[in-house]
Image 1 (tube, rainbow, N blue to C red):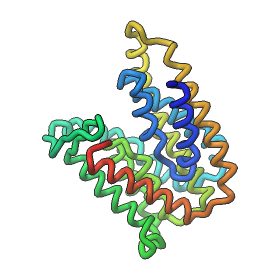
Image 2 (cartoon, one colour; image 1 turned 135 degrees about the horizontal axis):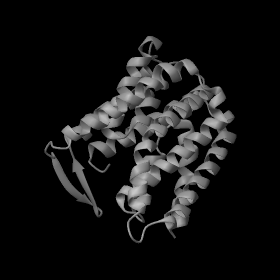
Image 3 (tube, one colour; image 1 turned 60 degrees about the vertical axis):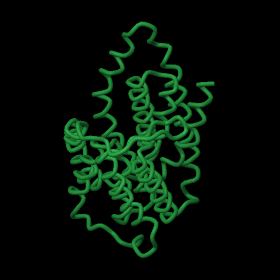
Amino acid sequence: MEFFLVAIVSLLVSPLTLFSGFGLGTVLMPVFALFFPLPLAVAATAVVHGANNAFKTILMGRSAEWSLVLRFGLPAIPSAFAGAALLGLFSGTREIATYSLGGIQAVISPIKLLMAVLIGVFALFELLPTLRTMRFDRKYLTVGGVLSGFFGGLSGHQGALRSAFLAKVGVSKEAFVGTNAVIGLMVDTARLTVYAGAISSVQSEPGLGSSEWPLIATGVAAAFAGVMIGKRMLHKVTMKFVQSLVGMLLMAIALALGSGVL
């Protein structure tokens, strides 16, 4: 059952993340958490997410716009670690509200509300016709990378903020997908250096070991298959579709964060 569930989620979500640039980790981590201890679920998700971005980079990296990669992606990495470090300060803030929803314990916190508002605003720029045609001047790429990395480090939704920004700099759908994949791989490589220690420490505990890797490998293989499906569909979609998909997923994340579900 666990192999089927991980495989079907990875297979269905991965094609969408090829276009949107985010979402696989958000959906897959709770699935892994059904079968793994939470630290291993986070690490396992990072492995699948990183492998998926590496595969997307192999397939679409040649379409990346490298000026975006350098000016946006490089500043995002150190600022992501800075945001993650600052998260410790916010963790001491009091929760605004907690409630149960279908067995899920929802927690509304100040940082979640802040991220919900920020991501929701970006979503409106993709969904409202009057705002969709707006473009960000490329001279602000470095600032965008710093903000994406920093707030992504705080909330873990760096991919969402990155896609929201890159969709507004006037690139083709191929360049958007390729650039997102390359930057995502850079961020994942940095993250995996941190999670590698977590994987080792969790696997050293009694009862946990190589038996977890087949499920992780299943997620990776299904995600790869999803990317291949998405790549075959890429020529059929338009940048307007990509922007609409990014906007809808951003709004879904904003609502989930604001309600405390994520």
